[in-house]
Image (cartoon, rainbow, N blue to C red; front, side, top):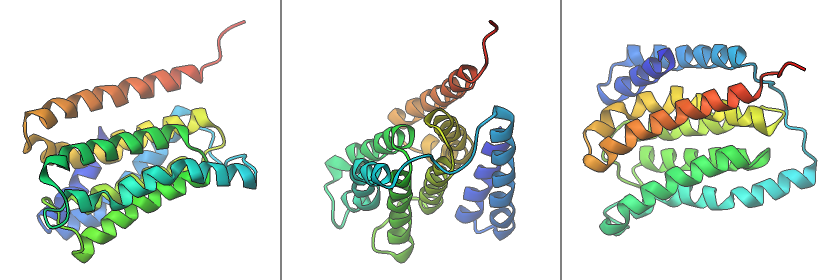
Length: 211
């Protein structure tokens, strides 16, 4: 909850141009995330993959790079088709979830690159956004992918992914989701419950059972 509040303050600082909130939010979020991962017993470190495996993971992550990096053009009224806006948004969400929990190593860096590209397009004015918090959301998603990269095993990567999403992304999306239509108002609490459940499930699997 503390991590969600810190990420909410960061996005609020951008929307309301409160630079004090923007300056305090990111470092506080980073500290809370690090403490959460330590308490969860995550084994941090470089992924134990060969060079060939990194290349294979990058190939698996290419669709996520395309969807997350360039999908924003389909949501822009100047380039895209309005009827596809929701499908593009859902595709971006699903690709981020699937890639972040199944792709390892350098593939996660491609996922982060896709989100950073989308943020750069928005800040540069190449694509239009409806809410000024969107670049913050994109950078936070990139941070989630980068944090997942620094894990030795897939089980630890998934814990990092779910905890990072819960702390960094949920707080940012509180205000935008409840200002949207009924679909997003229903989907938001469902996603929050899903993330909390997956965190508890993954952490429980790390426990050593008695002989």
